[in-house]
Amino acid sequence: MSGTTLTPATGRGRAYWAVADSWNIVRRSLTHYRRKPVYIAWQLGFPIVSVLLYGYVFGGAMKAPGGDGGTAGDYRNYLMPGMFVTTMAFGFMNTATTVVTDASKGVTDRFRSMPMASSAVVTGRGVTDLLIACAELAILAATALAMGWRADGGAAATAGGFGLLLLLRFALIWVGVWLGLLLPNPEAAGSLFAVAFPLTMISSIFVPTSTMPGWLGTVAAWNPLSSTASAARGLFGNEVASDGSWIQEHALLMAVVWPLAITVVFLPLAVRRFRGLSR
Image 1 (cartoon, helix red, strand yellow):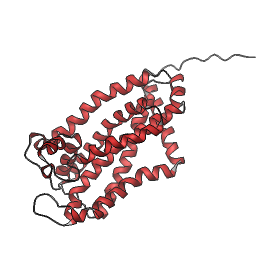
Image 2 (image 1 turned 90 degrees about the vertical axis):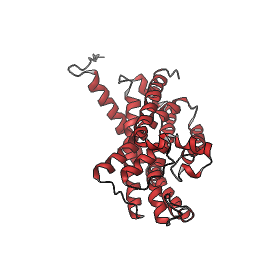
Image 3 (image 1 turned 60 degrees about the horizontal axis):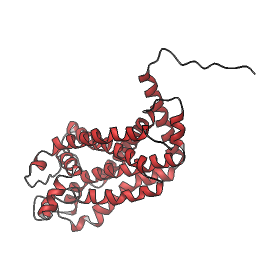
């Protein structure tokens, strides 16, 4: 029996292999999506259904901010940036579900036993979810345009608005990875909806915070999702409702600060949890 001696590749540093390993994880994840069209259809189709429900079923009963009323079309114009934020916010549940599913099937353990960069699994998951988020925003924006929504803030400002949405999604990816590594099984990931739902409802996504009771309006105004929604509305040239509080007057600043703060907290927690897995 002839033996084969494995020698490490030379001439390429750790950075190269970290990127290469991460890209392999991205390719694996995208291949799974391609082979499960029902799953990706649900993930991409859910935002469209939500927009149609809130825009047409509830939109007629809602009032657009800035006046005594307004048409349902005015409300849809106010709603759309909020729906973009909702889609980005709900994405952390998909991240957590995927991570805990891989862990429960032993896939994560197999990756950790292979000679690959320890950061590749977490980084690859993050890149994959950002690509999915871009697809979700593209589909949602096309739906919004078909419903009459317009971004009148100019090309650069519109790009900035979508950039803020992706920045929020990037931050919440690490929340999803951390939670996915904590959850005991994929079924438990369903309970995350109990967190995501009030997080989106107690905010300025659907209605201005000035329409809420004082204490609840304050909580909603300081919700990070409210900052991103208000900042995106301003950049898109849509109606922005503000109660004059500091947090709402500095929505653009806080739309950057909140995601960075979330990333600073949860990225190290996710990496530490991944490295400390004992199962």
